[in-house]
Amino acid sequence: ETGVTQTPRHLVMGMTNKKSLKCEQHLGHNAMYWYKQSAKKPLELMFVYSLEERVENNSVPSRFSPECPNSSHLFLHLHTLQPEDSALYLCASSHHKASGELFFGEGSRLTVL
Amino acid sequence: LAKTTQPISMDSYEGQEVNITCSHNNIATNDYITWYQQFPSQGPRFIIQGYKTKVTNEVASLFIPADRKSSTLSLPRVSLSDTAVYYCLVNQAGTALIFGKGTTLSVSS
Image (cartoon, rainbow over all chains, first blue to last red; front, side, top):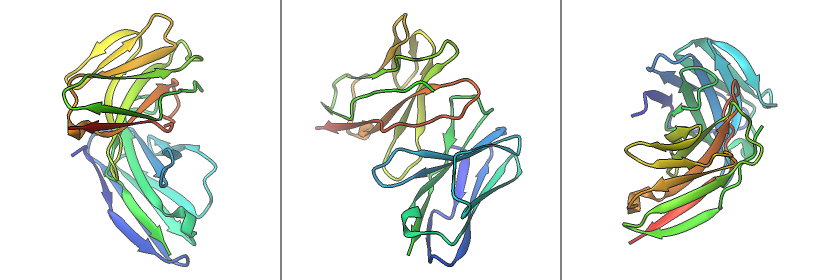
């Protein structure tokens, strides 16, 4: 138990669906992150939020839309995805953006048909 | 951004000490070195972080020479449950962590 909870753990969706991934942290951290991990590839940083403000967006396609309503919650809204978007999506949090100690959730396994 | 290089894979047996070395030749003055462990289908887990010399916790030790161009993660007496991917990262101040390919450690009985 890392204090970072992701739901759902598994998601199967069609290319025309709209779904959302949710992340919640109970650690009082100020920074939250979305990472993507495809099969046999390194983790890719997608988005970084610091104090609810998006501070980094690593050239992620617009079909991925993040939302951070408060410092404890982070969402990743998905629409018109492609099969190559199938991956493990990991949420993490840290005390602040410059901290090297990230606390990861267990991830949401997404399959796009 | 400091690039890191570490072996793709390593093999060991239970009870042995495992040392994984990472090179980071262009590390900056304000950068820290951080190591993570990842099991399949799980998020990475923080192991240890250091700036120079030696850091030790209940899980591992981290050795950093004076020039800081490399670092070595030392796992004492590994067990089968230590089979995982180990990532070496250089944390540039003010930026989020970028993960590389890591080292896949396989521990056999």
